[in-house]
Amino acid sequence: MTPPAFTSQSVAVITGGASGNGLAAATHFAGMNMRVVIVDRAADKLAAASETLRAAGAADVMTSEADVSDKEQLQVLEQDIADRFGGTDILMNNAGVGGRSSTLEASDAWANMLGVNLMGPINGTQTFAPRMVARSRPGAIINTGSKQGITTPPGNPAYKVSKAGLKAYAAALSHAPTTMCPAISMRNASPGTWATSSKTAPRSAAGIRTTRTRSRPSSVNLDGRKTPPKPPPRKQALWQRPGPWPIHTRH
Image (cartoon, rainbow, N blue to C red):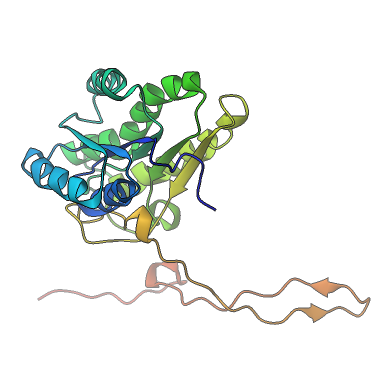
């Protein structure tokens, strides 16, 4: 069933919307004849993205170079959108960045990834949600997470921490509609890796693929009670196996 906010009367705001999964989602909204706002620091891509959205059927298109890690910039943007369109109905906190980081070394990468990937959605939600609630219209807040924030595999800890933090924030946010506004739905997309401008950016929320796993048939205990099906065996990664691990040296 199509969410009630997904209508031609809605205004959709997508951060990181000039390319990749953000542009894919924005194009989907444009095809529904919505008014679309794309926010991206890649100023050179905004013009082309805007034309793509108009061609897809957007009723109107607005672009912004606001930095989602800067809450003041988002506050200015939110007011500009309210002045032009009356407010926001769909907020997609999609902007994300990757990079290289390590656990014990402080670097700008930590501040950049936490600032955009984690604080970006928090800033966006705290800035846009109050007016969305006050308008009492059907709405949606969508946060683009990552499977890496759930599985947290080795490597690039700053990225995993930022996405795991976003998952926790989205979980807390999912309880907010009961006290905030029942008409606003909260969604968190945690897809796998996808090729966009961010090396570790997640796949478009509009193109998430789901996989099914087969489970073994339920067995019955001697007392007649059924036991839950056992999950299929999973292949363990090297770092999950008990040692000793093979040691590879480079000559």
